[in-house]
Image 1: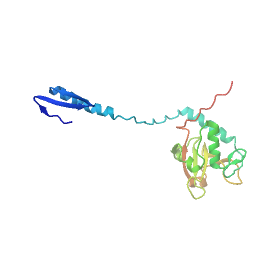
Image 2: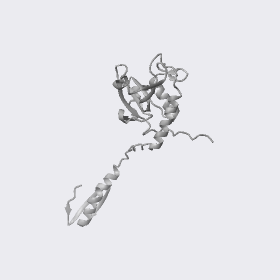
Image 3: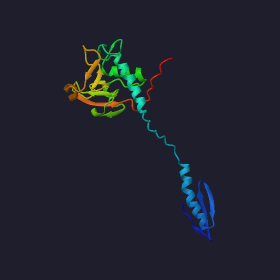
Image 4: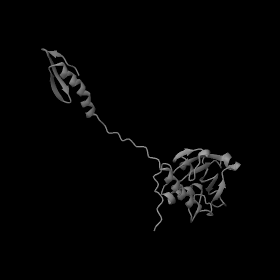
Length: 199
């Protein structure tokens, strides 16, 4: 903004499309202060900021984990089937997990173990809690098998063709060697809370 003295007065100054006459230094200072504000107002843009999703309270996490475990245990004995996603047809490992979380707490996970391994929060073996999803490398590539942690070193899973859904011990050397990480889904989910029993 250029201003030249003219006969003791400051020449007209453009501000937000209007012209102002400055007769003294105070007027000039006001214009200097207002000019950036007007400019900022003209160019102001609304930026959408995604708020972090609040953590699910600890007691609710435990309640949700209980629902997950009950649903998973109810499927014990159902046959393994590659690509299976329902009790009627059988389950593979990731199909079982997807079904359990959807039916128990209303949370829809992706279909494959590799996709499920990108959900929620990563946790180590020493931090495992009931309801966490555990992953293993059993076929020469990451996240090739998965199950749901039950607690006390046990997890439930759909093992392989010819087997049925059952419980295995993660502390056995076979699983320890192949452990590939775990994810906590229930900490930040938008899952529905367990429904109160009908009275």
